[in-house]
Image (cartoon, rainbow, N blue to C red):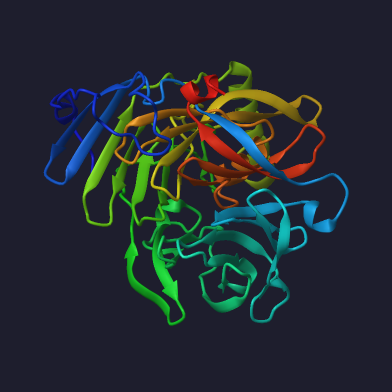
Length: 420
């Protein structure tokens, strides 16, 4: 659904006092200012300025897993997923491959399943997640199936999950497993082609859940491959564990949430666009032209210009407790050079958190070394870069010595940090 300017202008200013924010409860309503209106089944939230937290929230480290050398179950490699339930933290390490179980304090408990092709075994672990009852779900992508384990580690069952261009798996709070399936005739390489469908022991069931679609055509460079314009806005969407579907076009900071009951939440936020340096723009054009010269007949750029500002956001990451983390691009820096004169740029990511009611909670200050995991998620090559429920955050990071670790953090609003 697209709301008109007139509808937004008709919003009524709400007094913040007495409202309750989701996630870590701020001591006050912070500096949030905005408007909320409801017409029928559609609620519109316009975040005009400030935040409920009144500033960035910190991730305060409470436990760490991972060492440079020592026992093998503490030496981590390619982390393809993390999750937590009860007193357990689960880590999928694709470099072994293994699904390790640890206590909340980081002490190794044991493995779930093992490498192989048999029942309860896996070869490529694309993602893991948990249900509210403690069951652990492991997406064994190459086998096109999901293995289900008890919280104590016993193998319970497995069922099929379709193989797609993404590593997506969404486990609902009740344990229903959803996988991406083609929902339309669009090109299979684009997210607009997909919806989610529930899968179980008897195969797919229920209707395909299709996120909101918008009248938007991503800008492309002319040529046989129709290459996307670097840094251009795009359509993105996600499914939350509570069944909600979130979607938006990043040419502005707004998105729509469709809840399982059919009601809609339209969220808009005022923000300061991040400029793109002219050097980065020109390097993006040269890189695209180089690709065209190698694989196509075209030799020069023919298409819309590279934007002067970055898109409003890159991806949505719903949390287990119902909040929404929005990953957006920050400033860029030169990461390296593929060859003389050819620079490679990479983003510094920013994470914004929104409450369940659509109000802006504030920015989440990311730990050093988190960029790699976020980058994999942003490019759609892996599952969520963190497991988040209320104020508990489990996230893989790489320290300054290149050691991969999984850390448990407490999401802490600025007032609480100052009091520590």
